[in-house]
Amino acid sequence: MDRGPLRIATFNCKSIKRSMEDVRHLCRTCDVVCLQETWLLPHDIAYVGTIDSGFGYTATSAVDTSVAIVRGRAHGGVALLYRYGAFQKVSVIQCENPRICAIRITICDRPILIICVYMPTNSDDNLEEFINCLSAINAIIDEQGIQPAFVMGDFNADPGKLFYNELMNICNEKQWSCLDVDMLGLDSNTFTFISDVHGTTSWLDHCIADMYSRH
Image (cartoon, rainbow, N blue to C red; front, side):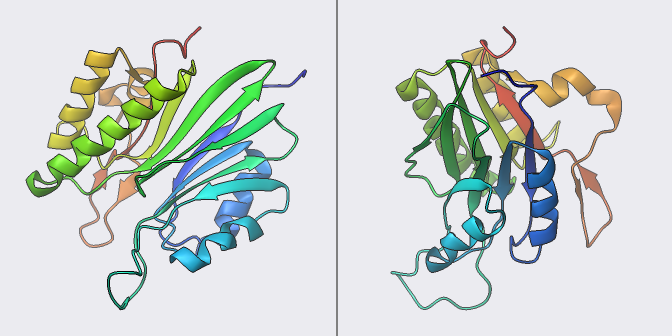
C-alpha cells in the first residue's frame, strides 16, 4: 500500500455530542482520531459510529449503570476512530479498563499499536489509579508485542506536577519517549488546557512512544 504520512489527532472533546462538528473536522484531516471525555452512557456508545461514515471506531463508557441510578451528566469515556481504507487491516484490542481503548493497524505490512487514554485528575488520592492505568497500558504493549506503539490522550500530567513525574519515571524505566515534550521542549510555553474557572494553562495531553517508534 503506497500512502503518505499517518495523521493522528488526540482531542479531549468534553462531550462528543456537543463537540460533534469539531470531531468531524478532525476526521476530514486525519486517519486516526483519539477522543477523551466523550461523556457517553453504555447504551450511547454506537453514537460514535454516526460521526463520520468513513470511519470505524472502538469506544468505552466510564459509567457503570448496573450499580445505581445515574444522575446528572455522564463522565469520562474514550474513543478511537479510524479511517476505512487507510490501512491494510485494523483490529480492535479489548481493554478491561474504561480509561483505555486500543487498536492495531497495519500499514505496508507493518503493524502499529495505538492506545488512547484518559487519566484521572492529578492528586495524591488518584495516584494509585494513575499508576494502575500506566501498568494496564504497559501490559497491553507487552501482550500485543507490536512495535512501534503509541499512547496518546489526556494524561492529566502537567510538567513539574506529581503525575508528570510518575509518567517520566515509567518512560525512563521502559525506554519510552514523550514525543511532544521531546520535540517542543519544556521551555516552549506549550499548553493543551485552559481552565474555565481560573484562566490558567496546563500541558496535560501527551504522546508517548516506545523505543521503536523513531525507526
